[in-house]
Length: 230
Image (cartoon, rainbow, N blue to C red; front, side, top):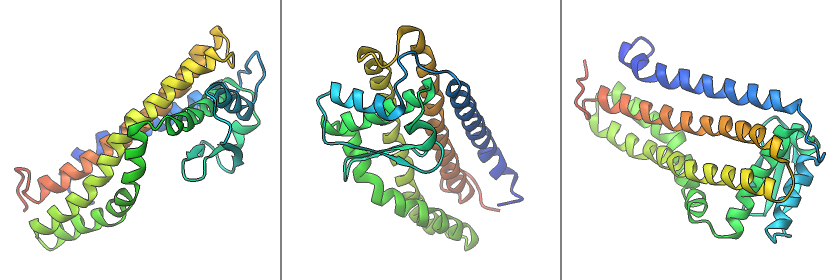
């Protein structure tokens, strides 16, 4: 694989997209981390304001270590905000915090794609850890059937990522709309929030493309998708 031109033909575009998405996300976040909101609410305060505006009072907002490690856990209704977001009153921090609050609102409203994504987590974890190795083993042992089994497992990762896209886009749409409606950001700050969240969305698209191209490579290389194994 390391010396297979076909591998680089499939993976290189996805890798470049992932690198660009990562750079765009970090650079946009860093840019708007230096822009303070006029109301001065921190990320934690912004998330709380957005949740209370939706009538949600049972979600705990806590700080967590790392950068851009923000997430909402529907199992214990905990909204964890990374250190650069929790106590910061920047446009970037408020945008990210409101996005995560958007997930909590999805949960409270029983948003079906969020439920489906949660249900797919176990199979996606298995597909991620086992599927790739089974496909690789199929190529090594020239077993198309083995590649197919691995591909079915690995496709669970792709399915999870595809379902994740509308979940993340909807959370961002809620954040953009409700942050303004609740007075968390003013009109002149909405563009900054939108840019931060749009950049972050690219990472989910890049991840799905990378998984798809990896899957197509193994299917093509094994001959299951019209390719020919040498």
